[in-house]
Length: 631
Image (cartoon, rainbow, N blue to C red; front, side):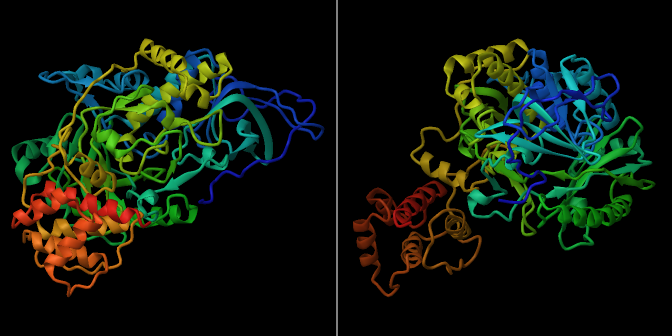
């Protein structure tokens, strides 16, 4: 496992707890934190809070508000000096919204209701509600911080503690009984019944020994993680000219604008030449601020470890120079930017991906693309599966666009620790499902459920693991969430490839990240398969699964050349490491007898000069299953 910012606390604790009050630099309207110092007599602890929520990103705030509203004495704690995390410190001010559009209806339903909707309305978005959609999808980060502070201060059960030096878990068997808090060379102990990890990287869970994977590790590519972004600020934009030119020339700029956001300009930005070899630039998301400045998400930094403090410092150094160069470039290419000036970078980086904790269940990309409605659902999402660039050879892709899928409670129950929940992007999602489930509105909906579950656990003396498999408990939590305004309707949704003979093959190729059906979920199953499709599929099977082909050097003739059926047989024979001088008929007979490809698929191959993508996917899936038996 990677080194974390937390150190594992293994000592035992003590006879008598002397409860004292220590005042930190917390929000003035909130009560001071209550801390228990330790001595060295025997193993003993005194619960000071019902729940401790570590991390004040939007997910942590949502979890704390939810637990407080359900009667829990809640500590919300962070090493940072202000709340809002990715929104306020990272400058991610363009929201990734999640809607569901019932069949035959033009009216959209917001899936991430509840506490996220409260925040959204406070930004003024309700004033521009059109057919169920909130057209204000960017917010002012200063205003967002004020909204979050107001929401926290409104809850008398929340104690907010900011600016501690660092935090470590206090463990007892398979429970976290509290946290060690370090502040100004002093150590304090804070105890609770349950804990919620709302840190971006699941730092608390990792320090507790919860197993996790990193990046695309489950696809045999642990070094690949979605790109890291430095958001930057620009002033002196001519917004009237920008809006006028974009609306008049959408096709040229491939850009779109509303009252608060501008996005696109890929044709213009793809001509930009980065200063650093580890930097790529995408079409920018431009979020307008109340002072008419803009926060811009455009830069992608590749090949660094987001869990490495030294790497973070390097990224910031690289980004600071790169974004100033980008602003200079945008002056000559983006309308309204002729007099734009660079006004700094955000305090924190926008880190999309790091750890994926291993939970009681891992949400899969197949779950997402099949719009699964889980019995233990705690939230819905629908954001397109956005796989941002993970190496310098690609610009990322949209794997697909689900109608709506649910997140089961089991995804936030980590293995090994019974009274801990993990919310946010590092919950138990596979690295492809994560492309959708990572977005903050979904995270806030999931975190709200964590707060409700914390109250249920405390009130009923149950572990989260017990709750995860208790139907009565889950239904009670779901009922409370609905009362709080969460959207948890039962949705029996189909999907584009349901019932096809190729469905198992499609699921397999989705699961290894090979299929990319885009925003319209188009798979092109009836299209004639090209050589490049065949070749890339073999590479991906070999690289991203447990199988290991003896021969890997097949070279395609042309990316536009359909793959002849005889070549399919010959190449599969070659990939298995067999003698290529064998007669074609003998290859076919051997492959039939050994079950390399099924009789039905072999017949289809021999009956046609070329095959469709659907048939090719089935054949290659059978080929994978044949090889899997030898792993």
